[in-house]
Image 1 (cartoon, helix red, strand yellow):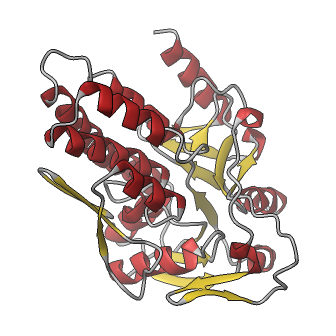
Image 2 (tube, rainbow, N blue to C red; image 1 turned 90 degrees about the vertical axis):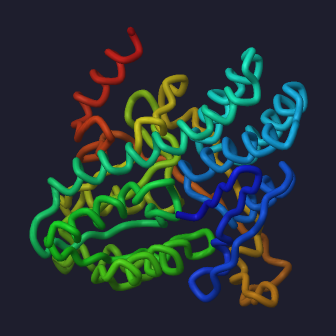
Length: 336
């Protein structure tokens, strides 16, 4: 887990310098957290949303007025446009600002959001692990483990649960742009958990599938539309197309809090674009090592959208759904 919350102190594990250094950053202000979110010091849709709730609760503990907290919440809400958990969690907290028992109402809601994510991760892991066979070779993208959630993770949480059940999974770890989040973070978590894994460049996935070396693809999500389309780290759509061509099961794994009921399809999901230097080179401890000409422009979207028709199933905290079941379940919940 990449967060620490102790009464009036909130800290995050700086994920930009993992796996070589574990350094905790104290977040005292909204500016601190926005900066950390935007440079990916803290990342993962659930973690971003939870960290925002915890920092707002911390500011409430320190004496922030309802007006000040509402103002800060509005600023945080815009920090990452693609991840819906951030918006959902902040909105839940804002509902408590005008409560007669403020700030306790805000603090309790933040704690509830944190605890809820841990429980959702456990349910997701149990549901997804039932799909995994003995010695299965799983390809995953980006980082979806404990660093990205308050619990054991989403897609990587499924793999962890299968590992705990003695199924001995083998994981192909995509490097994953931006900032090689798979090669740095997922590999680091797999190593700590003792899970068999091998890092691959994203473009090697097709070759592995062609050679029959991949049994299942598990990926996370930052936002799932009402029709089942979903946004995830750039390169996910490519994997879905490859998996479909090679007839390999492709699952999106996420908590129900990632579903955006106000988003009809993936076409409405806003895609964040990041700085050009992340493509021209790679950031290091002492700055960015550029390998491309500084004058060359670069296109660097952080996410892409995978159409629902390419998804084998949605692994959620409520179960594993086909496309028809997902839509039916969503519509039933919407009518309540």
